[in-house]
Image (cartoon, rainbow, N blue to C red; front, side):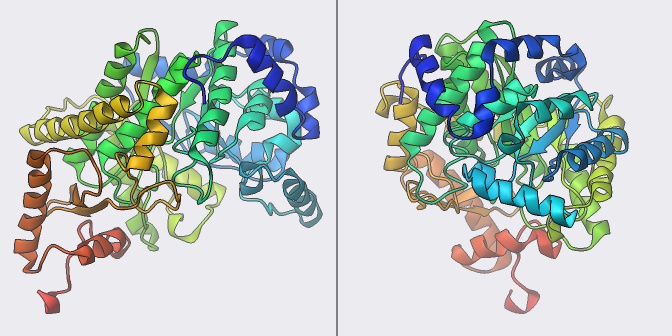
Length: 485
């Protein structure tokens, strides 16, 4: 890992090896790619669209989507653009590419051609190469982001940035801890420092490419202070390598007061820590992810969950919202279902755009507690790693100062457990090694006890289990059945 910006000569030497990982790497000419990026219409640049949204105080909508073959992928994205009204578009990358298994990805492409059906769960950008990526960008009218889940995204970043994508999602923490079991955190952070250095180089040459750490992490009962701490660390790592446009994210947890407070504190705290370390010229925006947990199978009920997320995103002031589809419970949605989720969200964002929202005492109280918790974690983490951001992250996970619930990674402690309070807000049931003082711990204990008193049962792990499945059963809080109350 680096505790500084990677020197240019060292970075360029690394590039030679990275581009040899698959045969399409030979087609990447960095200087030509920069000129291609500069030739794009300003309407296709992610950073411009985000800046306009912040200025206009509007919330942009963006889906997830990706299939194996270029023509089908373009058709899908055009549907989401034209029928769904997407302000921003994704290209979701397939699982083989996410694990750098390009031979299997090629087999998936060949079989998809043979059968006429996408046999990959996303778009294999590395195998298709730079020119195919450019054909996608040229076919669309709005900016396109790479969304994936890749621990080592170096070649993917090279291909897609040269291919004209103007936003790249992920990070060395957020694309390790929730996604894999045995990845070295030190290696994934180092590999992502390369990605950030690449995007920083484009920035030095006058091309701004947006960077977006993955906010929801495991997407299941993640306390805001945990996801905020990861987002802030990944923002510092990106800024250190020269990235100037960063979008930090948060996954909807369900209590609207808490969710609004989370987005507002995320924006505030990210800017605060960037400024503290001298990164004053970084543009910060926010993304709100609609409900990431279990979805109702009934389509009408699924639309209610989508609407719930859309309204919260607007009221929170999020710069953009990642939209779910009414077929979420069944896997990959059809283009039509995906577009319908977008139209539902667009209706909500349009209706609420001009509403005047007053910050309530409840939201202020939630903001205060999230700030205290996040600062407690960040100050302990920065001290432990002596302000070396990569080292801070590795040591923080080793010590359990940051602990992501339900994550598969062996480098994650897995001792902290969340549960909902009586109003559905996420609280902490087991603290593990989180660096909270006694007053913060007592706050959480009291909130969970209030729920236990109402439900006439003990505060226990059963609450955690009940909460995980609650929304798919039509509730937010996992209440016991009446016969057990």
